[in-house]
Length: 213
Image (cartoon, rainbow, N blue to C red):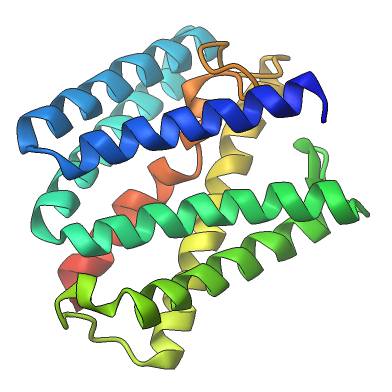
């Protein structure tokens, strides 16, 4: 195992543990957690886009994403956890399949992305999504209203948006000729490198929660 991969794994474990701690605790701690994410993300986005429309659009979008995360967590904690884990497993699936199977590149925007990685994103997110619902159903307190097909479509949409968000941030990194948005997370780069997909899935999931659940 390379040092870089080891750093990535250890950082992921630490970051996941801290995230779970803040998410499941009282609102004040969760607010602090979101505020910290917002400040670091804006700082990294500011370094990536010094000024102009891209920075303003990013500022507005990150604000919407942070507020969506807060209200989704407050309104439907179980659904919020579900979306977070679907996004996380989508990332894991893409990384695992990309490393194992490699294959043709997906796009020049992000040279490390492969078609096998895309497939892995969908397979991991779908597999975990149904595992979550079938075996942790009491966690939902019988509030799950989607049938099998609707659940499948929901998971696919979340995974797709998660991957799209990853590509959008990669596009801006490529525009500015940088590999990572920062260096705060060993093995990952910046915070935006880690949450690039989730900041897109959360607002969309909040809309779904309001309209359909």
